[in-house]
Image (cartoon, rainbow, N blue to C red):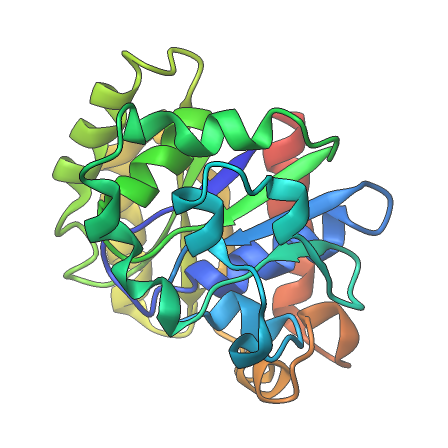
Length: 243
């Protein structure tokens, strides 16, 4: 189980979740779980989020509804438990739940997927904590930007606290939207690597306009031609699965 987490939006979290899932899904059984009420991972999977009968809201709040009942087929190389704006009030309703940080772990136990990729919302919510409690790996995409380090410390502290409930959780960062033509990008990359040491992956994802075009057409990066970041995501998946 791999969770994509970051407190900042717009860093390529959803793109990374979908790209990783769709590549792994070519020869593995893969499920994507969309924990963001914006439902971008759901839309990018070609699913009309307004027509979903079961979402992550039912997954978390309805004790009698199983994870299997919430799964939809996407027509891509993976299945999905989707999200939409109706899930926005899930968080506040979780407050009264006993052992609320363990709901997702309990629900996912019956599933038989090789990989589950969780696209978390851009905050350290109870739903995000649920994702971390049941994950083997937390992946945090970072831009090589001067403000990229904001929130990293609190994020790492949260992951450390979660290790009391999930001692096997690993946490790695990787750089997205990288433009090697810009000197400042290289300088900040060096700073990030010096600061994060072994916690940052070697692979970096290049900036690529074809990603936006793919999203607009509800396609994965593997379904469009000349997507240079596809090569980067292939390297990322190899690094993650072999690490």
